[in-house]
Image (cartoon, rainbow, N blue to C red):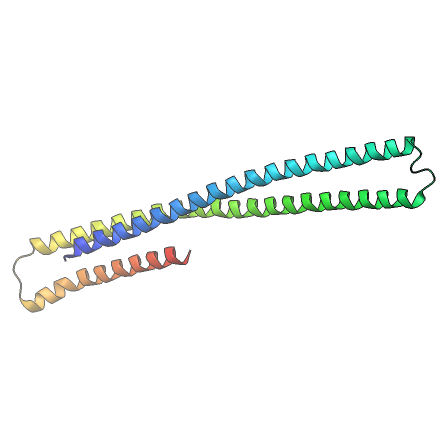
Length: 183
């Protein structure tokens, strides 16, 4: 396989990997958006439940007071107040937990968005670098072809810059690949 084909294969591999990472991040962002929406719906239901509980207990206390049920029974009145307080605390706790989960999701979504933007910039930069390397390889290859016939020693000397360029290109591609895999 000649140098240009190797370079193109590495370039395609890096581009495919980059596209895959970007696509995965977009999918993650969409899934987190869906999850956040569901949590917001749950929070609305929690608020409605809390309101209904509070309203029902207030109505019960009012009717019990009108019927003199609570007037002579301080223990029952105390028990009702404790239950009401406990239910209110549980509702507040559930709302706080839901809000904390939403905040954590927002932080994760922010990180994903930052990574998407960073990968986009890195991908563009890598593509430019790959294009520059490809141009250098093409120029070096065309210069080698135009050169007159040389001895084997001269060929080795002429091929040295091309070999160095190839090695540098492969190193850059390996570094890019490693960077993308480590993310």
